[in-house]
Picture 1: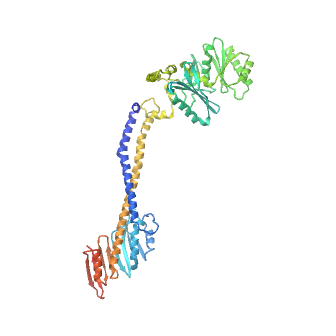
Picture 2: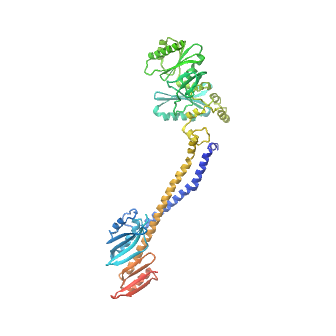
Picture 3: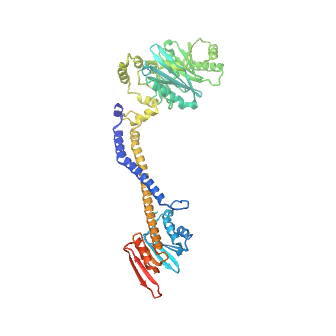
Length: 141
Length: 417
């Protein structure tokens, strides 16, 4: 108590202000961070469950039209990637009709390989005994 | 008696590359000196730390040192622009500055002040040459009972005893020319063991020399033993030594408060500035910065800045977590988006798989719009009923239509609701 009295008024004021900031801003921010960190860890686990890729799991890459096209051409006869409005891309994949299951597998992994979401509509069309699929991709990174 | 009540004099000085440290318990019957400690100049921090330890162990202390600079002279008047100490009613010893650096020191004596204290009782109207031999330097002064007439300092490094004696003699001759007075008697105070020098001086000067030999530490302990002697210090003390000594043996713990009160009352505020600068440790300086006392360490600006340290620390911590929070929020958003996209993709793949499985060998797809909510497909059908049943299993209440074509084939369309 005696020592407390020797502390200057200005120092006391700063201590009180510091304490208020600690209680009203720092601690809530800290609590929020740790809560979100916990949720994030749970999301990572959830995604692991959804990840059915057979190959070595690579990190999710930002979308790049050229890389995506090259990647998809390893499985399908023809791949076209065109930029459209709203930072979206229209993709047309042409494949042999027997490759529908390959397409379905491809569909299950593209959002794990690339930071993209697919518009909830697939347009199938038969072209010269082959199957064409059109879809719209939206990168989110 | 516990250490808190003992009055202790801590003495130190530097000679060549070594610091020498000693302390003594002051009693009414004299001082009890402890063992001398020696530190190489490379261990300066340890040396200072040791002084701090002793100061903490014995709060009633004076830390005393000696100035061994050669350029100290005695003047008739005080020089306020330089370090001055009154050693005689009208004599002041003066040197450029107090040069103890960051080594704690509360009393700082000139060898001339020590010489005066040692020989003042023997002074008379006869002119005496008083010589002090400290750190290979001769501090010489001509004195009578009423004043010090002249002073010299002679360095002796590298000189033989005979050369030293010769210089002393020449100094005396020079003084003789000025004053027509030759010293009637010599007193010599030797802090170094040098019997040969004494012998040569006796022979060369043909004068009787009263020799006193004592260590610098003992001389300094003696200088710190009373107010009268401490008065000769370059650094003015604010402690009343006699008072400290008198109360250094309290009758019981009950006297403790009285002791402290007396100590505080005896503190004088004048001349405090110089002492403060020399006597405070790092922790004291830090405490001073937070203290409200205007006399404590650090100016207003310094204290203002220091007192904001907790605020800065809080902001730093808050800033760190704010940034971390923003980062995790972004990462969480991306992970949510990815999970949602993955769910949609899996659902779409499932719809596609179901539709093609339902058609099997009964139909061939020509065109389709598939989404997770509904489907709209069109194709050629060979097995109408199996196709209709299969599609209705996936999408009940869907609209299934067939249309005959000109080439004898049948077209089907299916729309889910």
